[in-house]
Length: 418
Image (cartoon, rainbow, N blue to C red; front, top):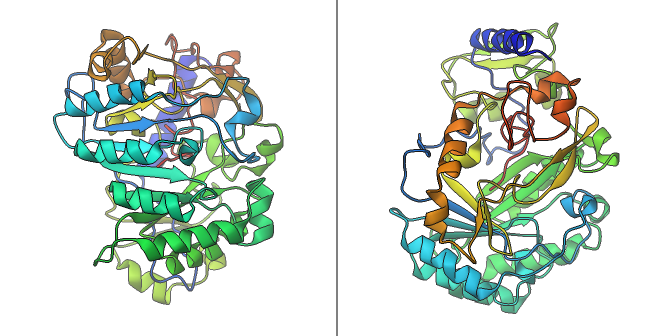
């Protein structure tokens, strides 16, 4: 796609979106305790000039895992697996001490953090530095001992991945895991938490949505309510394999950043209205599906052409100490974009074995990248479906060089992380 035609299409999409603030509303009946949440734009961080340090650090303590989930990035890579050395983690702690504000440290990445034998020590050390600490896990290794260790270490939030609400649907995605065992682990965790008005650690649930499991979402919502979860995060699947191309729920939206319904679909324009009133009295989800719903007065920003990692001042650290601006650039991977394979090459700014975390943050090329992503003047690769340049993130037809972000599913609002 030539840049001129791409820009015309982009302006057309923006004009369409400007006719009404576009937020699709789908409200399952029978789940009044839950409210639909569209993430607002995070605090306006001009990351190229400030702040002086990252506000959130994603830490991959290992890229190894005890499961073989059909959705996992490890199905398409040939990388060695390993565990973060404590010397590398100490460099992260030194970086935390250099942060000007309390920093959030999120243990996760592309492995199972509870696989690391010293994970509870890492959590405790990060808490001693004043960080807010969260951890993402599949829950299979969350035995009584690990639960006690994490609670004693002061963990603030535990995220559990639940991609199904029945043993059959769960095992269909999480190969090698059993839902009854995971739920038993989570219930024990909930029972062992520090009793208070808002128990700690807080519990969050992550659901990766695709055609094969989306019918389970209402049941997962009910499970989350039963487990006293404070948050339920729904994200789309990343099609790392050809099989998963047919599982995505956003094929139409990929072709139009302004897409929230078919052109012939009637628009239902709602005023500002109490969410609980909608939940209590609204028609069923099937009736909502007939309409493209727009909320008048909703001034939240559109969810495309914005990087959640850059906007929240995030940084990602690989198990071997490699530092990247975001999770998508942490490892090289293959993902299917508009049904064609696209290689997302990793970009490592530097390694903590040689440089400090804050030193890497201030590298000129890193700061220039953050400014470039903030402007987001990248070719709309998710819209194009034709240019060979969209088959990787090496360059785009706007003249941008590696790494380019026009094909990033996170930046278009399809994928989200805790």
